[in-house]
Length: 526
Image (cartoon, rainbow, N blue to C red; front, top):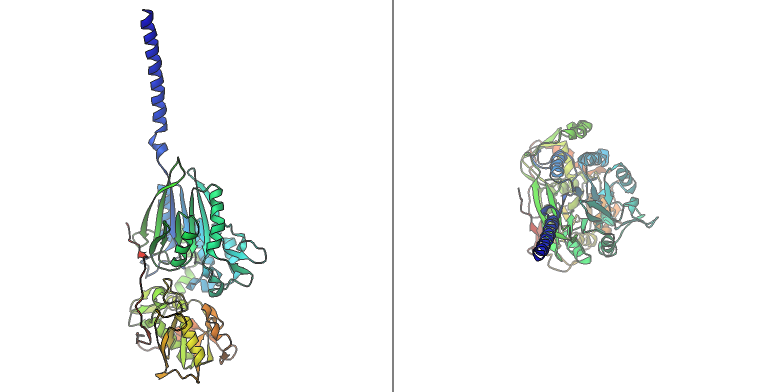
């Protein structure tokens, strides 16, 4: 009997122990505890206007606000990021110097933005003012103030956000050529993005970030280089105005098309146990008329409605499709490039004209029909003055060589020369500086001992986009007599008694075949 009691007590003990272990096991293997933490990142880049583009078919920040609210409802652990370039250039920024975009982003509830090269178009003081008006945080780890040695306007070198028990580190990096392509001022210095990342990313990891995201405004080639400089989990970039995806050193890289034509949505699945990024899911969401405007955004539209109405006034008509796509105007002859060059040359009475392709900003095709004030200003929004200068044949050749010096790169630079009165052929497979194969001016081969008159903007004449060869040229336009580029274009379109019809006529010929790379167009998922 005593033996049976002992056996029963032992059995009871084992049963209790097993039950306790089972309960503990169930608790520790709770699917809710094992599931990774999901952090959602929303991303757009190069957004220059808050109203929809392409006749209202694509983009629009009122639609972005609707998408953002939906994303936050699905996952409270959501951040909205912007990959630079929003303060300039745009039609509205001619008047408001970017304040309208800050108002719009504040309404959307943007969390973080990296400085883009065009943030500096109005100079550092205006940028500081726009940044002070922002309810979101600007980033730019490699943008320094020479007077203080710190980051420009005391932007944080990086941020770490804790969400759902995990930490997301974000660093902003800007392309160094901003030093010469925009107007950062003498006291602003842009340092190398790679050395900056090498120094800062380990510190972000040291401070406990589970995931490090590069929010960049660099070329794709530079983003790929960046991925090899430091340990990134994801790079979300901008600058190209093209929907791109790529990877480098195991790091995925994404860019959206300009003006919020789509929004990237990235779900980071981070292990609760290890703190490591387990997987990344993404979709590219078209921002189109199927997405309703968020009603609260009407306050922004109402604030700027007078200008919006003024911009809808008819200037003239086009009888052909006008190619104002940024990528095309930065690498080949276009009918809009020819149009702008021709009207510059005619207005200034010059032998020829040279237009930096990056100054043509609309980044869309204008279909045949009415051209409005907005259309004209969107093609040439900077309002640069046009002047006539005298140049030697040697200087003209040097300028064209400079214009095509980076034509073999993935990132088409704004320096690419659209021309009028000039015909040239180049071979980008040859070394930079020896790519121009032939040049003629007004039907005659370039004469080495001759001088020519050239129409161009003051921006280019003063060395913009690296055109240093024009800095010492003799200016033939009298002080105070220069006209703005968009005024010249508007007057020419308005004066035409028939719809304008500029053509591509072979004035620019590329003799090599442009090589592709591993960068692919993103598939649309939705």
